[in-house]
Length: 123
Image (cartoon, rainbow, N blue to C red; front, top):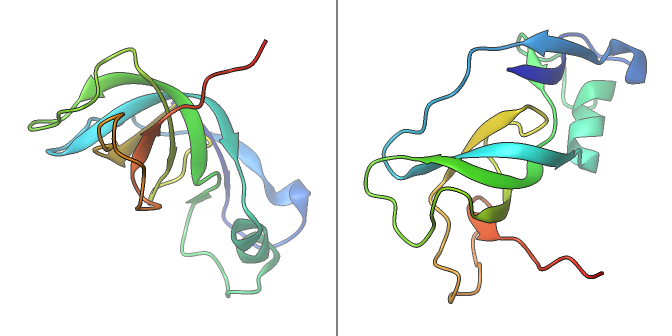
């Protein structure tokens, strides 16, 4: 899969596309095909060097939306094809990303590291 990454600090010019192995969902995880990814300010600070030098290749985009493409063992409350948004412990500015199992659509999300049903798109 392709990902946006940096391995040295600096401005936007240090970002580049890299090829990474396709992820597989582990137990309790969901694999999402990323449609849109967001880079938060903490990630920009990291790229600028505010938190020190990166430890190797650092993939950006911890927030994403897309569709579930695979379920890890024991996942319930979501199905392949469901639209989801999530904040991931691993970067999301990739074609695919793993995230912990999302809550069921009837529960309101409480943890920032879990997938969530996407909000309906207006018009």
